[in-house]
Each structure stands twice: as C-alpha cells, then as structure tokens.
Amino acid sequence: MAQTATPTTTPARTYGWRVVDIVVAAVLGVATGVIFVGWNFVGGAGYEVFNAVTPGLGGLAVGIWLLGGVLGGLVIRKPGAALAVELLAALVSAAIGNQWGITTLYSGVAQGLGAELIFLVLAYRRWGIVPAALAGAGAGVGAWVLEFVTGNIAKSAAFNLTYLVCLAISGAVLAGGVGWLLTKALATSGALSRFEAGREARADV
Image (cartoon, rainbow, N blue to C red):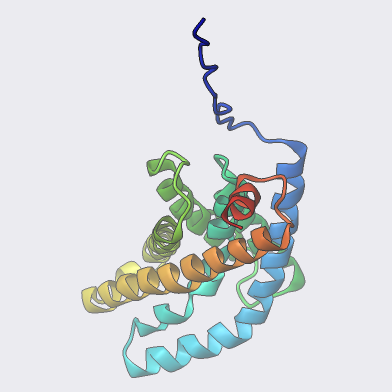
C-alpha cells in the first residue's frame, strides 16, 4: 500500500509585535543612540571637513546617524521597526545632549521613514546586504527631504544635488553596510536566537 507523503509546511509570517520585539527594539534604540552621541563629534568634524572641500560633500559623513532604521529593520523584521529604532535612538541622543536639541527627533522620524519605506517596498521579505544598503540610502533620502524643506531649499541646486548623492552613498555604506555586519555579528553570537536573523545564522553553520 502506497504511503502518502505528509507535506511540510512553513509557518506563516506574522507581522504582529511580540514582547521580545519591543524589548529588543528598545535595546537597539538606546545602544544606537549612544553611538549617535559618539558620532556627533566624529561625524560632525568630518561633515565640516568634507563641506570645506565641496559644499554638499559633508553628506558623506552622515551615514552612522542613519544606522538605527537599518538595524531595527534587519533584526526585528516587522513593520514599524525601522522607524521605531531610529526615532528612539534620536530621542536618546537628544536626551544625552547634542547641538540640535528637539530637532533631532524630526530627523529620527524622517530617516526612520526613509528606511521603513524601502523595507515596505520589499514587502518585509528581503534582508540581505543589498536591501540593507537600499534602506540606508532611503534613510539618507529621508534626511535630505527634511533638510531641504527646513532650510536647504534656499541653497543652490548644485549643493542640494551633491548633498543628496552623498547622503545616499553614505547611508548605503555606513548605515546599510555597518547595519548588515552588526546584524550578522549579533546573529552569529546567538543574541538573536528568537529572531529570524538568528535562525538563519544557525542554518548557515
């Protein structure tokens, strides 16, 4: 008598947030916010140096400030994660103290939405280095849009175009590349055992 093979099923992807998702988003937001505070000095100095070479080139130093959205999206893989982590990181940075004050939160929203929109377009299903780079670039575009409407609109087209390209490049490399590497390192260490990224790391071993 022939036996009928029992089909294997893959658990349906769920987009609702678990308690562990909220906790990890908070941890990532705080940790990234502390990184932002350190980058306020390094990136701020780099921004001025690059801008002295060519106005708009300072965008190349911005990428680390875009890290939260990429990291949140890659780790939690739920709608809203990129925005939540970037915004919380901005809040931590502002609370510790920086030269931008409350406007840091506006940047967190714009940058987080930029990354979030990329993950949305990819239907929250692609998480490799290319999606990470695209999300970083998207965060850079979000930063550019906010700064354009809040002051850069008065600057030259050459500046704004240069700044846009540099923000996208910096976002792709510093936020996307570094975010992807950090996620891989966390997953390999076992810290993400309750997340899809951690399960993928175990499967690759």
